[in-house]
Amino acid sequence: MISCEIISAFFYGRDIYYLEGQMSGGEDMKEKIRHLVIGAEVLVLIGLCISLVKNGNAQRVTVQSQIEEKTDKISNTSDYEKDNKKIIDIKGIGMKDIEGKENEEEDLEEINCKENNFKEKKRVALTFDDGPSSKYTPQLLEGLRERGVHATFFLMGKNIEGNEELVKQIQEEGHLIGNHTYNHVELDKIPKEKALEEIEAANQEIYEITGVYPQWLRPPYGAWVKNLDFCVEMFPVLWDVDTLDWKSKNVESILKIAKAEVKDGAVILMHDAYQSSVEAALQIVDLLTAKGYEFVTVDELILP
Image (cartoon, rainbow, N blue to C red):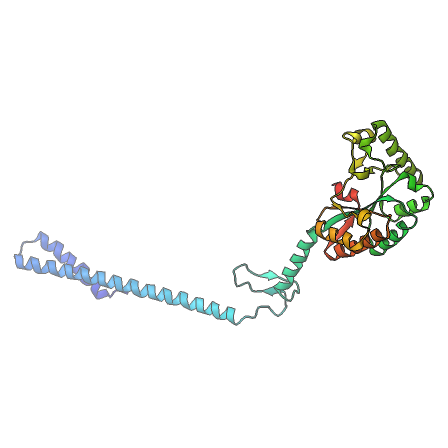
C-alpha cells in the first residue's frame, strides 16, 4: 500500500504550487515549489509501481499454491475409487463409469471383438458337375455332412434315372441342385430349339423328384449361347477355378491348382465322378476352412 505521507505530500505540493501561481513571490521560491511538486509526483508513481508488483506476486503465489494442492490430491488418489466404479481420467476426459470393469484394456478388447464380428468371412462356392454318381456322390455327401459344408450339384438328366433317392438326399442335406443338361451337350453347337429341349428335359427330371424347378444352369464345357437365358429363365453359372480334376485324376495336382487360384468369391469347378475328386474336394474344404473361408452355395454367393 502507498503511505499516507506520500499521498499527503503529493496533494499538499500541488496545492501550494497552484496557489503560488496565483500569488506574487520571488522566482527562487517558485522554482523550489515546482521541484517539490515534481518530487512528490515521482514518489507517488514509485509507490504505485511497488504496490502493483506486490499485489501481482501475491496473486501468483496464491495460484501456485492452489495448483500444488490439486496436484498433490491427484498424485495421492488411486486410479480407482473404492467402489470400483469410477476412474480419474488425467487426460481431461472426466470421470468414466466402468461398471465393474477391471481396466480399460478390457473395453478395448470388447470393441475389437465387435468390430471383427462385422467383418465378413471370405466365401467360396464348391460345385460338382456330371452327377449324380451312385458310387462317388454318397462318399462326397458324407464328407461334406461331417464338415457342415454345403455345395452345389449340377446334375445330368440321364444320370438321374436310378438315383432318385440320391437326388432327394442332396436336397434334404441342404445342397443346391442345378441343371447340367440332359446329355452333356455343347449348347453352342446345336440349334437353339435342341438346346432348349436338353435343358428342359433335365429340369423336368429334377422337378419330379424335388418339387423344385431349377434356376441355375451349368452349361457343359462352359459353352453358352448368347441370350439363351431369356428363353429358359435360368441363371448360367460358369467358374473361376477349374481344378481339372477330370483330366489329372490326381489329388496332389488338384490341390496345387486350388491353393494357387482360389480367392474370395471364387466358384470352384469339380466333378463327383472320380475317387480322386472326392478325396481332393474334402481336403480343399479342410484347407480353406483353416484359412478362414466359408463354403456357400452359388445362389448365396451370387445373389445379394
